[in-house]
Image (cartoon, rainbow over all chains, first blue to last red; front, side, top):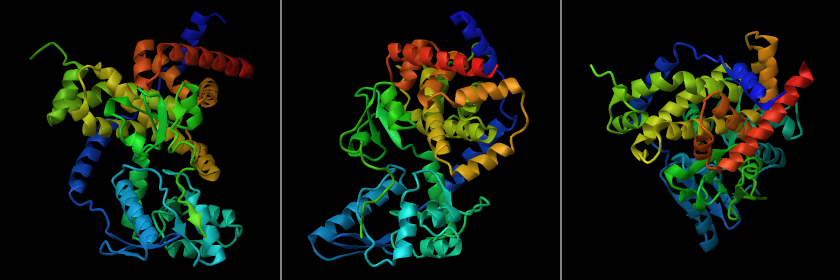
Length: 246
Length: 174
């Protein structure tokens, strides 16, 4: 097949995807819905507790911090700032340690499975149970997630029911819905068209990328395929996973 | 009534000043073009509509940062491709069960369409979006380079490779 022939075949085959007539109406309705909602969305106030090994608990509260010693205090401060950025859509990963040493083994396995769910995606309770090594213990997995001591840092909000329903959430289902919506709209890999370096969203280097230079990638491999390289600060770290010290 | 259509750039500047009629005009001008790319990139009607909606919301939020040094359409396609690429990242990582169930409710399509979609789905995301910008969006090599933050040479290499792969996949099936 000659190149010009291929060009024509491709043009013909790729034509003909039509949106539903309601697409423009849907956009307009969503703009109105967001304008109405914007004034109501308030970031939750969180109480944090930290040990010298990591964050021990995250709870809805009055913004208090419980931490003994400079190391625990530093971890708590870092976590509070990263949580603020995450809730503002400015960050797609956490790199503060969590301390799950007081958590029983099955629950710890469940939380580890939840921690492996990629940013912006969801998994079912059945998947979590299977990953934790007890495929039939779906209800127990749900209970273990319901008692997650470190919500947000271990993203139990990314677990939903197999039938597509939202399922419960320790901080309430309306926050769960908001978090999933936020992650749905927040990219993970952001490259700079001037430096040709790709970062995780929220890396200090990524925050310096100007609006016109931001290019989103689907993976580090994709970015490499067009001449970008991973950032040395964030690029080699596993994503969406708080470091765990058990 | 003026016979001259406002440029994309002037629509974006009007949107930045809070003109909702300009936003409506821009949506009307681009919804089909954006959808054509998103649909071929993501393979599902619902995902494509979702991506186009999100693109327009980003445009509305970010029009204030639009720099007229950019050609309006190039700036808009940057927003669209960024949204589509991230939507693809999430899609690819979906739980296998959920993905199969969603695929099963597809409306029937012609064998040829299905072949094209399969061949497209086998291209790496970056090659696919570049191919779609070229053949569906009708963008020039220079525009695609600016949209994806890469060099014109990389655009050509990616396109050449994507076309060879598409031809190979389509011939394999026929």
